Length: 438
Image 1 (cartoon, one colour):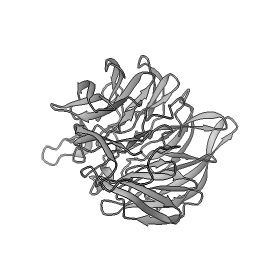
Image 2 (image 1 turned 45 degrees about the vertical axis):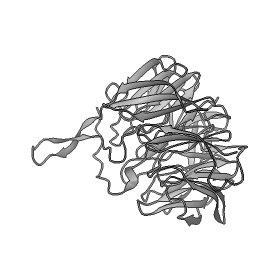
Image 3 (image 1 turned 30 degrees about the horizontal axis):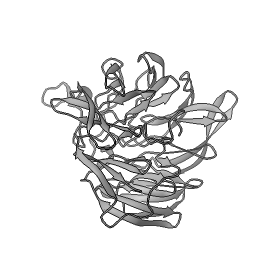
Image 4 (image 1 turned 90 degrees about the vertical axis):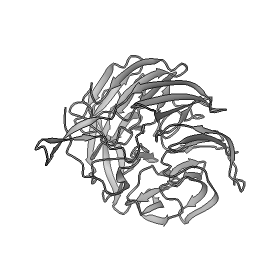
């Protein structure tokens, strides 16, 4: 198995919720939230039937209940919620809940002891290579967001257990241990990349020589194709269309690549190194074939390229790089020609920022929403910050205004919200709740 270079011990929160981390997935229902990032995998929805402002006590709480530890985002088909959490005795749990009441419909648990890994570092006491156990000081996971498609639920646990279940019953159709059985990249802070549906297949960043990206057949779990020698990251892949051609984009540990989703043929590769080789945020697909990507918390910077069809390939053309845009541990959203989202260089610099998609020029920064997890709801921002404050924000190139705010969750609140119609679903490391924003 390929062994990555040992990562430097992190002294700031850049390692924390990679898990939050993670364009259009073909065939995804616009009315539901069946995957990481929602209908279009970009944390944006069109017409949103939500109020212009909330009552003084906040939006109506429909229900709340306990749920175990984890940062996995909730997905829903409108009737059922699907979530993951860390259970007792080294187990992980996949749960289906009734969206109207929060009551459990079914649960599936499986063994998931934390991985021990031999690192390229000598232990001074033993004179042998040091054995490292997965780092859980930022949380025990799970971190990856499930994928709901075709009556099947696909989940990826903290230790790399990739499972396909019947969404209505919780019965396991098939399962793979990506680390032990497939030689996937060891991820010391737990797997966080979220699976992506394409046709009859499901695509996952696995990492490693010859299998950096893997496409599985949804029905059987058989490998459809494998490609790339790059190490995996905590980021999630997206699917876009360039000149009428489907194109897969994956931000790996230090490079971002473009591939044919049918075959895995690689079209392009751009180096975008970051301090720890731990790419986090999901690339964002924008009008005019513009692709934005950023690594959180270091000087790699934010970057936009334009993808164009050239001969038989799709190739990137540089537009801008701004090293002052440092991203964060969650994703930005687009409203018009501006992007709004986190801009963090560590634990003590958690800002929300607005900047020009076309030029990379920063318009403003604000400390009102530290570590923002944003949803663009028809031009307004629903924002959950790291401290558990839920906000309704108006943002434009001139600045932002908090229209409503209420404290709902405990810190750290690192899970991105889920919006289905006027219903908003939230969780922290203890509880899950449903709100009515109408």
